[in-house]
Length: 352
Image (cartoon, rainbow, N blue to C red):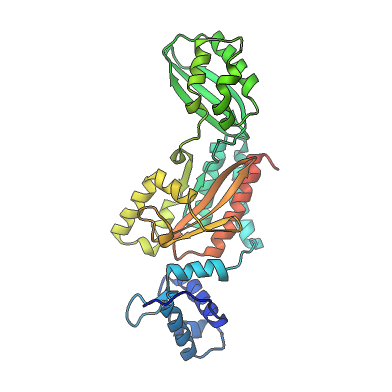
């Protein structure tokens, strides 16, 4: 029976840290002899066995098979990331390797935010060798810059919202009225004069009042006002998701069994669930959020770890994340995500 949690002593911390680090590399249970042979702790094999027995009694490691070594539990991983693991900057070799890939993100600044985010998620998947995700920022606090109307036909119109930085939102509207190019231009001019510089949330709350006494009192303007809840609303979370690196995660030993692969692919195909997993993951430490195993609420996610970090564009916040097996190189994942978040913040904010 697992006893209540308690603070680990120095020896227990050392052994737990080694078991996790070794398991990350080997994907095999770790025994006391392996620790004695590969790590110079100054302890006897018997002492290490006793320490491992204590860790197992308190639920930090478990023995998957009789006579096998030990593997970390969710509790062991949680203790490691909260109290043992140290946050470090990238070393020069890692930095150089990542910058060679991240450089292409800056090139994409000539495009839209979608170009940047798609480039970023592909780079993150390549350098992390895990499933990578990027969530575009929530837009309620985004600053509206301008609106354009494109008449597609006599019954359809595209509304293009240009938002803070490179962000663009497009919506196709079905029309039940005749709209001329002149009418569209008049409405665009009024909307841009009266709404530019406001947040989308402010526009939703006040558009009726702000446009109530304008000279342009057309059916098209009234349609825009009635549709403000849709036009200036938040983008659905699954539409904000960019994902890459599926080929890396399915190649991990944890997902070799056909049923595990099916569960994983089913989860990945449900973009809403993946987006929610990243958006709602916790607890957080120094802006990095790490959610381990059963801490994840989504279906088929109890064998995963989700590591995520926020990036900032003005007063908007997005997220970048890595999904992988619990047997993950946590320290490297944190270093990479910190770097990628900083890169996205700089690129999308126009910082050179």
